[in-house]
Image (cartoon, rainbow, N blue to C red; front, side, top):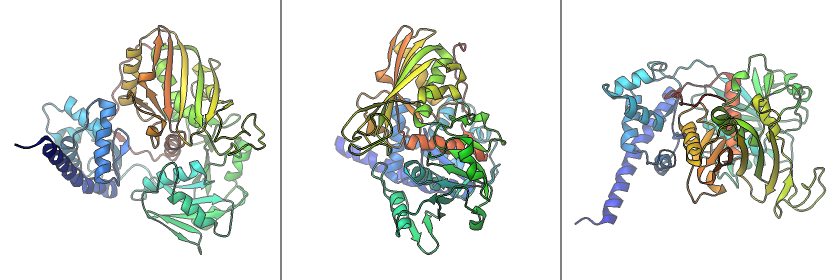
Length: 490
């Protein structure tokens, strides 16, 4: 008689075999067709066998059941026969759509209808490549570089061409490459990196990055490096108004600027998923707001649309950042001079007020504060809201879970109800914010929501989405989002 342990081992080996069969199909779709496959937003490109198994296992947190490889492998095999053009395809959502809507059709017929926009386009897309320059190479800059390199594909879309930094030492480029290669929070770079100290270039997974040394944003001739009509992503936070950021536009080879911080004055603060459609070709400078604003605005939008919001308070429990002191020392900001590694530091946040720039309906309705805590990454926002219409915990959670799966905000909102998760479990999340369903508190017309967010990587993903919107290089995403049945908007 077969022992249970033998059956478990056999099941694992069979699943490994299915995952091994998927790897060349995923790679072929990516290289030949510029198709990025994922499972609930977790990219499958360049994943190992175990990485694929974990991605399928992750689906259990979303759909309550593990996604069977027996379902996704046939999907991949069929997709490889369609001659697809550039696209982003979520296999978990596509599998659900096939089970829901595929009756009476073969898999090939269903896929040809579902993906009609890109069938027989053989790797072609509607966009051309856009040069990208990262001005500054700190925490956000290096994560943006990782994502851009990961998305490089066959060269279409966004092309990371250069980084601009001040020279810090004689071996500066070696140190910059090392910081890209190794990260204490986000782990090692997935791939290979080599450095050419003669030409000041870094080669990362086939992406050649020119390192330009300059302390003056208006003094660089990017065309000398073969860079044209580029979008400069300013990660320094040094300039936040139109006048300061316009210095980049004075440089030959620069077309537009994106700031990875809240902008001042009349600059558009964009939270992707909420007001990205407000970006026009005439917007030479756009800002991507803050990590906290990106985390809370989609959730607030979802709640406001269904229940209405009278007013509320946002309290963020935020990981320390580089602008704080490691040990006590002078700081121009209140309390921030005290040791970030030893203290919880009460400080202000402009995120609550900044929400109104993306959601004008909430202007004057939210207050906010922040507590900096001794963790390096992943923060939490606590939304204490007074609603127009009452609800229950289960109803509100069910609604937000649905929004995370089947709405236009599914790239921004995630949902989890595990009783054991802690902050480090959300490192590397590509969503702007993750609602912790078990922590939700509802009393009639009062709701308290706890929203986790990777304030570094999750925010960087939102920045990339805004960057893609500016460049017009967003490939179509499948399956198309089905309309969520909502109560009338309040």
